[in-house]
Length: 200
Image 1 (cartoon, one colour):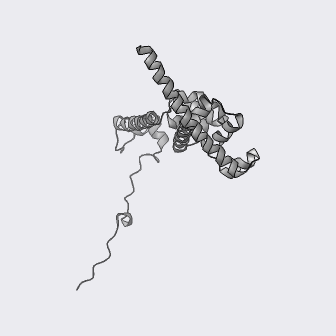
Image 2: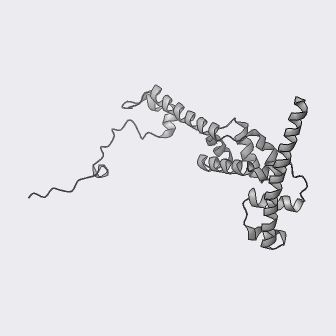
């Protein structure tokens, strides 16, 4: 029985070297438009421009899908200055994530994740209530609620910062959850009374 030689993967096959076209081709050559004038280029000027436009279109679509709600602008005052600047750029809608990344010295993936994270936290029902309508709450309770739900700090760290026990922090957080439910019920009742008054 004949023994066959081991199969070679595509990675093991020798790669044919490309014929020189007057120097190495770089991305700068593509964007500057110098690549099209060379012999041996497999892509025409129209094809290269189509690919570049497609990449820009994909970036714009990703930006539109992850674009935060403009109402979040009213809740930015508690965030650090860098996060406020980042969300202001994202909400303005004049820049893609790639352009914002160049402005803040980061990469598009990190910018997109950070904007998504901040948007999700600022859209939390309790965070909205604490920032926009904290009726009947002391500054200490508002601060503890934001530390937990906006900045996602641990119970122990919040307790040390506020000079109280972890049990007290947990009790405060439970109270804030009950307070939110009662505030929602009160708001719904007020809406119902307003609709009854307008229909009468």
